[in-house]
Image (cartoon, rainbow, N blue to C red; front, side, top):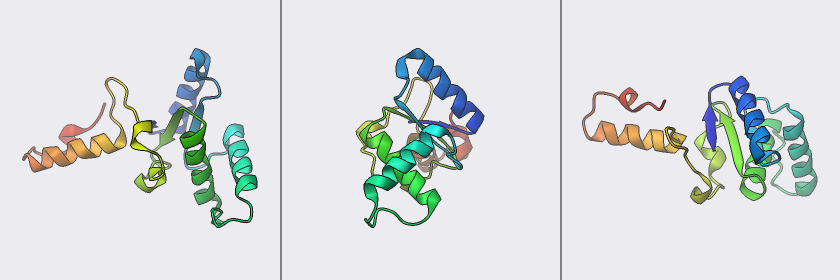
Length: 131
């Protein structure tokens, strides 16, 4: 999982990864998910879950469910913006699927570092912010 703050950076990273051997392995999660790959993932998910209670009726919630399922079952890299990356979104993803890259932290490790710093008496959570 890669977390970023903007859709523009998200698209850049996806293109960079695709150009370097990861084409077809990347899925995006953001507030809109209106790119062709996300729409195709969503339509496939809806067709497979038609008639089940997996479909909530909320396009936003169902899109997130479809994207997370694609990452969990078929894709190796998920790039999420802050608007897509709330903690409950990833509850069905095994922690072994979550990796960090040198020099970065996942959202959960940033939160853990902030909590640890606060317990140890550091000045503020901002002292542990990721780069």
